[in-house]
Length: 239
Length: 168
Image (cartoon, rainbow over all chains, first blue to last red):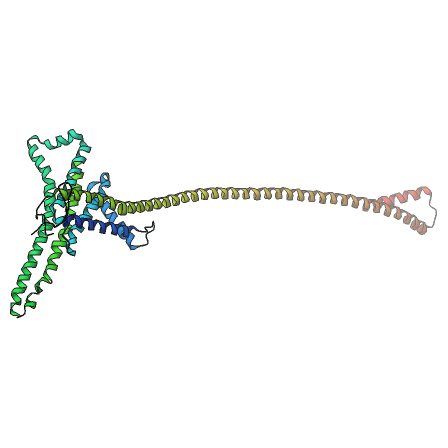
């Protein structure tokens, strides 16, 4: 199993690799932006179109969720959470179109988790001052090393959870495809035709059902968990 | 081609691209989705609040107007009552005046009539008396056909007249 393909390398600063993940992210950003523009075009105070209703529903749901989880004080975070959720869920669901999911790349999920980590620390410092922030690691004193480790463990666990789920889904899906292809050729040995033997008939059907779990369910769940954890961590850092 | 990153790998450039991409997506979504939708929602809320405020103001105005009108109405009713009352009083006064005037007039007329009647009666009585006296003289003269002396004559007449006067 390979990581993302390197399409080409920009030969500056020791070579910048433009990988599948990066290109897929750009495609998703273009897609999301197009959808946003499409949904919000020609909005009126008295809504007339279904597009506007969908846009309003999505935004309202997001703001309600953020307000519910983080409180009114942190409502400014809603756009970031919305962007993160959108790119996360579409980045995973893009596997349905045959694209390599961007969340099956540890660099992506670790990047997001580090943003959350920085947000948490900044919010903690903003709420308690630098002294209070440092002091929060020494409560109680004997637990200081553990507190620091657990703080550092947060982004690692978040990124690996998201990456692991999607990547594992990808691995399992390809394993199943391979296994079903073998099964097909094994069963079709009874047919004396090389062409027919090469048709992997068992690949139709079963992967679709598994895909409901590994792609749809996991994609949604991981995006939700990631955003939830971000909200809860940032919010509790400001307590 | 055919070059791959390893399956579990942390690539610094990819990390940087992830942050830049996330920032770009955040800004794009904010510009094209969150801001316009929030603006519309806020505007709608503002409009609804304004509508409610307007309705509230209209309600207050209506209540004030109603109070004003009912006050005016009460005033008008009071005024009407006063006018009617005054008219009734004036009418009563006038009618009293008229009646008393009429009564006075009638009394005057009665008085005058009485006086006239009295004087006419007196006139009539005097007339009758004088007539009677001449008749009496005539009759007496004719009946008696004799000369009674002037004295007796006068006396008789006087007695006669007096008798009539008493009878009348």
